[in-house]
Amino acid sequence: MLLATIAGVLGTWGAASAHAELVSSSPTAGAVLPTSPNQITLTFSEGVDALPDSIRVVAGDGTAVSVGSITQSGGKSTMAADVPTLADGSYVVAWKAVSADSHPVAGAFTFSVGSPSTTNPDLINDLLTSSQPAKAEQAWLAIGKWSSYVGIAVMIGAMWVLGGIWSTGLRTCRATILLAVAGTVAVLGTALMISAQAAENVGSWTDWGEVIDTQSGKWWLVRLVVAAVAFLAVMLRRLLRRTTVWMLNAWLGGLLLLAVVAAGGHAVTGRWVVLGLAATVAHLGAMAVWLGGLAAIAATVPRQRMLRMATAFSPIALVAVVVLAVTGTLNAWRQSGSWDALVHSRYGTWLIVKLVIIVGVLALALASRWVTARPSVEHPNRVLRRTMIAEVVGIFVVMAATIGLVSSPPPHAAANSVESVTVVQGDRIAQVTLSPPVSGGTTMHIYISDTTGSLTSPTSITVQATLPDQSIGPLDIPVENAGPGHVIATNAVLPLPGAWTFAVTARYSEFDQTTFNAGLVVR
Image (cartoon, rainbow, N blue to C red; front, side, top):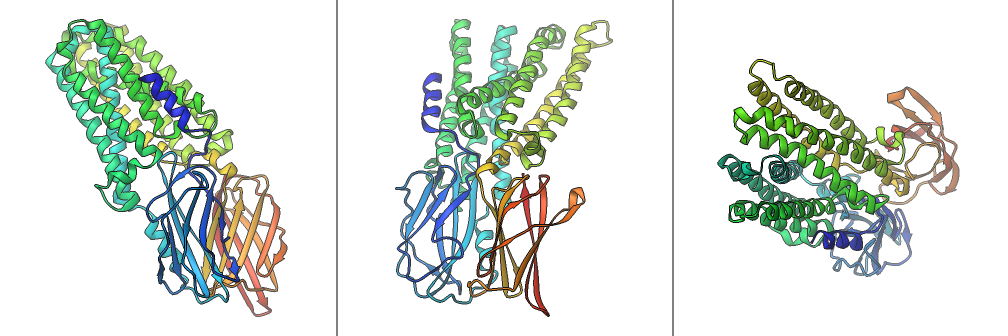
């Protein structure tokens, strides 16, 4: 079953960048077409899963246009929808989809048919806001992920550690309670994940079908089933008389469950997918051993045996920490590719937070190890239980930081992506696009239009870039005229990654100019 799961993962996913980006569209953003298009087509940087309302078309006055069903006949990296004959005027296309790593992505752009019409300046912002998941749904999704991770880790790790150093402890009442609670948390947490994702995708907590239709959703359902089967097996473990048979099944079943967990996230995106999957399974397994072993010893071992069990577990925990460090470093490098890309991203920020917390937990682990090495300490069993409980709580916090990590886009995705921002100033609109949004040299496009959707013709357009966090700038970005209201910088040099601010000044006459301040994150 484990080999079949891994084969399924590798057969389903190729190399992909986490978090899909829109790379092209038909019609293109800002296009003025002589006749109505027959279809809206979107092309992404990687495969995506379409939702029922993945493509919406709204006229400039806010009137919704009925479109056909979403199709992906051009491949998983495309979405298309037929549109009826459109009257002359301006239109907004709002889109959303689900990336391979389960995260929703969304965006919007405008185009016109015949003569552009007046467009409500707030229409795009309203459509984008409506496409974003509510904070309550995001919070419940995070709680579900945390519960699922913690429950699975404790259930698997406690079984593995107790079976290895104290097999008779598996039959105790305390072990039964611990495993029952962990299994329940794992199953309920996974179910909550699916429900919250359904609420994010389609606004319904009970429409699991829309989640299961996505690549990541299929693996989440498999995770739920395997976790439930594992929970049932744990509850029936007393029926098995041969401990070796039970432990063999526990190891294989645990690895299967961890492989399924890895398949539903970042492990199957980015570079070196095979290595990433193996590293993630090892990372999850090491975390399960560390957390589950600590929980098992702290909650199930009698006080008089505490020192003996902790002494036996100490070298196992040390190996688990080493595996965590190696595999975590490997995955961080696999997803980023450079130190600058890592530290100047939300993914890198969460990784640093996680590492800081782990250092604190390791300090507690050193205290536990010090007690096991010095039996002469007064009341060593009592002290040891307290330090181990504190260590368990610390790992729970580490798992919370892990949720922030897996919910953030890995920075390597920026290498093949396009970042764009639209700024409205009165009745004028500026769109600033970086392709790709990286430091050192990139291509910048700037479009200046009015609220009718037509490109206007300023006498000049100038651009200055500022990086406030590093007190850099303003830097002049040389641009060339590329058409009415359109300038381009073929080699916009931004020396450092970070949150850059671009001041775009469109001058129309000696007394008429508009300055747009646009913010974009450069990696």
